[in-house]
Image (cartoon, rainbow, N blue to C red; front, side, top):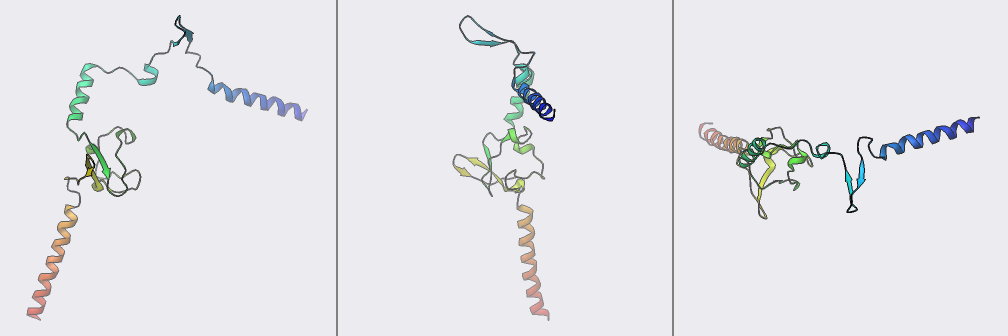
Length: 150
């Protein structure tokens, strides 16, 4: 009896798992006169709704505002892929954006022009450099003052 129950259970599991790989009941297929297979399912199920002319124009205007080339992480060489990052252009990413591959900050990305990689002009390392040089100059001035007055 136990063996019979196991056999029935295993057959049930086999058929229930393979049903996930069968065609959808809503989709119907037919062979056309040319011998190709035609499906009655609409492409909207796969690609979404068709965009209107206004939506296309709006998307083109938005794309014209941003850099058309590639953005490259200077630390690891990752090339920014808009599809992997919620469909946002690189310029739309906030200051908290991190490289998906190496977790480098946004300021470590640079524009790629041809085979050359440049630097960004969005502030990036400027505050760090300004305060570093300011600290060095203040240390030198204090040192000169201390030597002359003490």
